[in-house]
Length: 238
Figure 1 (cartoon, rainbow, N blue to C red):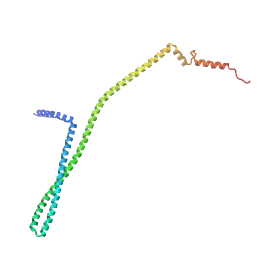
Figure 2: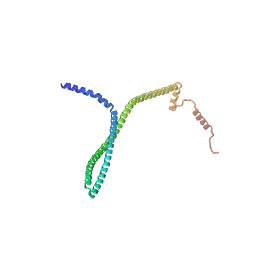
Figure 3: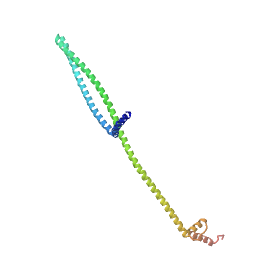
Figure 4: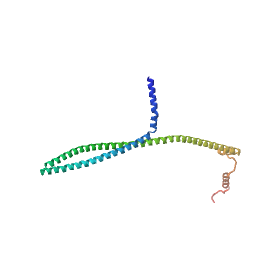
């Protein structure tokens, strides 16, 4: 029986997994919609607060009117007593008592409304701060998602770029190798040409300081200078 309970648990878990994946995949869209719904709820709450404030103002005006009426009736009752109109004064006293009871009830109601207004104001203020906080969180989450997508794309581009860089390096090395080989071949060809023309042995003799017997401009000038020195008459006293 235990194994079948575990199988049933597995089936229930498997049924939840697609829903969880769907929620995770659309988490940002869900949060954005929740923020919109929260803003709509706050608009409704502000309207309720405005209605509550309006009711408080109306009740305050009614209380002021009642208080003025009670003061006026009290003055009338005193004047009736002064004139010996006790019955009229008694009737005024009854109305004053009724108005005072009504005023007391309305003042209690006004006090209750003021407390409700204060509580609702605090709740709306706190909700507005939390809403701004979650808006910033959503903006950061979107920025992070965009950064992740950019990094993912950059990673694939970097892989291709590295491959192209490797190809370029290989091509450059191959070109350098070909150029070096060509230079070596040209140098070898030049050496072979010198050997064919007998220049190689002359170069070796010159390097050893041995005359090759060939005439060049320098040798001619040297010879001419030597001839001039020998033909010049010796200098002496006259």
